[in-house]
Length: 258
Ligand SMILES: [Mg+2]
Image (cartoon, rainbow, N blue to C red):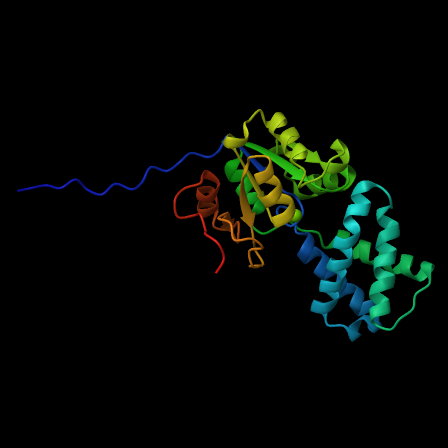
């Protein structure tokens, strides 16, 4: 009886030496926390119901994104820009707010935001799964206090070896220097490292500029901004698939968007 060698599965690559994660909308769920807080604000301030929740969220996110570089640069404080953001949002609903009203509204939002905070679904479980098997770092653009508070709130401090915050090191993603600082903290070379994040510009482009392989966390199924092959995951809940993507196993690499 002739025997043929059985087909063997391709060898699975091991995890990289270091895995770097973005914080906001990769581990901490800013987007859905923000949406819930805005929903609560609408319940208290009826003029916001002139916008749908989706539109309010989109406009709020757009204003936040536009202001973020100035906050990162320290040229304006987060409380000031938050009040201004709500003044502009109210103006879109035909409501003119005094500075005092805008400040009161922004504080009401902030209280709701703090109360509704949560992690991205599956993120903590993924960190627990990776813990002890690779060096885990966080590379994030924000204020140090804000990000330290999130680490504690999420209960992930024991799972993370280090966190590099733009405010703390004076340089922000996508600048390759912030990734080099993280590599130094991890004791890893770029080729031994993967960066996971939701922002194409900050995380994917930034990591590539430092020679680090990016994994794009695209849970909202956004179109790929550039036709370059980048590994993508849209959820952390299927941890074994995510792990395979981190390892760079065949089948996880997605080509250019059609
Ligand atoms: Mg992010």
